[in-house]
Amino acid sequence: MSVAAEVTVTVVDDVRIVRVAGEYDAEGAETLAHALALPAETGTSGTVVDLAKVTFADSSFLHTLLAAQYRHQTSGIPLVLAEVTPLLQRLLDLTDVARAVTVTQTVPTATETVHARKSSTRRQ
Image 1 (tube, rainbow, N blue to C red):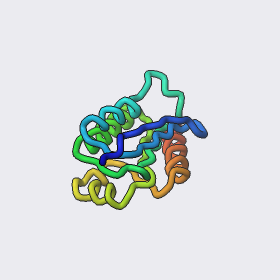
Image 2 (cartoon, helix red, strand yellow; image 1 turned 90 degrees about the horizontal axis):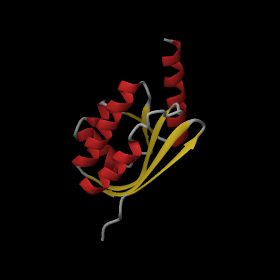
Image 3 (cartoon, rainbow, N blue to C red; image 1 turned 180 degrees about the horizontal axis):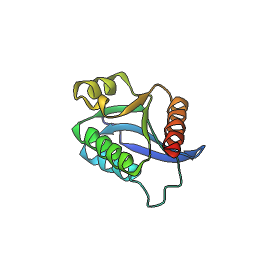
Image 4 (cartoon, one colour; image 1 turned 90 degrees about the vertical axis):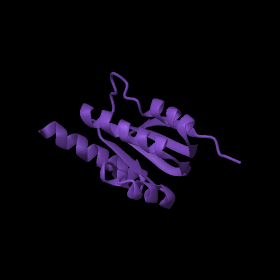
């Protein structure tokens, strides 16, 4: 029995928190892609993706994360992954995706990372 992909988006301390749960194949990845799409006027400092409750992910999930990372990076908006499960961390490591994304252990740490990166880009 599979666990349906579920995505919720909130804004906390000027940071979009995208909480992801369930199993992600091509269909679930499409749901995630919509949540990670950058609105024209984000009005936030960055995006944190909470992956603590992801139970399965395939290559379409990885593609979605990489595409979101690219869009955020080209827009100057930080994207940080948080609470990556051991299974998902192994997938990120094996596919070398871990080198392309920022990963932190907790959502609060990810939020701090977003704020630090955003403030350093403002100074440049």
